[in-house]
Length: 226
Image 1: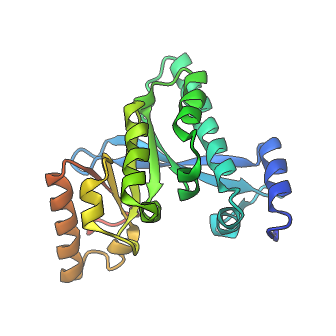
Image 2: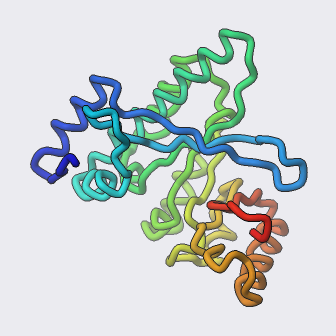
């Protein structure tokens, strides 16, 4: 197993990107009513020299700590756009794909401009890319985040709040943030929806999201009960 440290992570990441060892796996999103795939989420995966998958928790925390996570995020976006461009060229209709962006991106003053530049270079309609921002990014400050998200939305992209319910949830904040999608953290389904309190909490989240005209995505659904 590769041992990642703050001292070697940047060089190893650059080598992995150069050798196409960083890839995107696509987790499908299904419409709960129709069962039809309505989109997907691009998940970063690192392939070792032995062609085995390195778990994200082995490298993502170190990348976040060293602020190199932004380099990974931008690379995954390019991979997604490459795939969509090929699909469109071959006469296929791509589904909307969500791309995760760390809270570190909120410090990039040219984030939206760079986002547009990459997507436009592949001739991808902006509405096919969903920008996922982790719930923890909201802690930076309401006014700043609202301006940040508005700029992204004004450029034609959809914005989703990821990991809602993972620990920093603020209903007051969510009601003011101009996102379009609320992604419910899988930890809220840990009891397989057999616990009455768990069901009540989930129902409450779905109800307030619907009234705020937010689409909802529940992460980690695997069973009929969920």
